[in-house]
Image 1 (spheres, protein in one colour):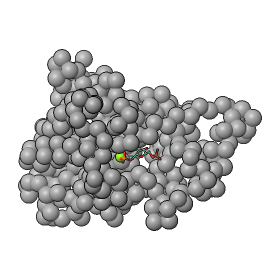
Image 2: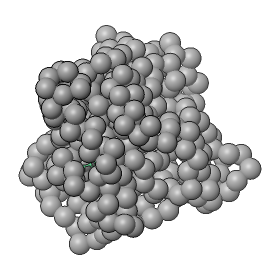
Image 3: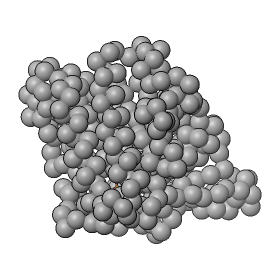
Length: 322
Ligand code: AHM
Ligand code: MG
């Protein structure tokens, strides 16, 4: 099996970007170890602090964020980072060529129940003419990403990553201490009979999404003429991984639970990196209004509706909004 650096060279990735990716992955190896310690590591449970989004931080959220931030900033490769757990961007090396946005531990509610969690990251080029402490550097659309990926801390620690030449899977080999390529050019099936949505929010959805999901539930007895299965892990990183592996549709639609917060998922470090991975695997990632990666960001922590997965199923869903 191919090691990471040669696999990336095959995709024509620059040596500087390979070095940054290796740095990011060094941090994920450390997080993987801490996650695996579970109760023994003394890091389960919550802190008393809230992040900028008003969510109580788990102890492991904070530790993963500090690890990720420190390792990446110390490398000197990045001009700044932004994170789900940081109020605003954090300046790095003024001459750094890259910007990294990340969710250090996605699926935080799974931490204390020993279920799936992961780290999501997105890399952009740093503008040369802006200062390292200017958060506006991050206001770049998803289609300008040069690399995106996630590491899933599951039964095996897996990396899904793209640099724009297909989406590839790697597994952390603990005997060798690095990630090995296990699947090149992952392709999402065009059709599916599996959907992933938090059904408990159904009464808060707009009528289009209600109608679409109702038709899925009717199965062979309805207009879709096939039966569907449902899965919801409570961790986007796990749900998206399943979609990449065997197809499916994953949606976190806008809802009316809180008028000040119609969307849950964050554009910069959840939706955009997943969109890059999904599109590179032949899938679609959209809101009702269009492609996620074409959204011009206005804020580091902005939230967005997400509908992603198998191309024909996402298109079928969008028809309800016509
Ligand atoms: P987090 O980054 O704080 O863990 O929140 C994001 C997560 C996603 O991973 C997941 O799809 C969603 O929130 C789950 O939401 P819900 O609480 O509705 O199940
Ligand atoms: Mg998250």
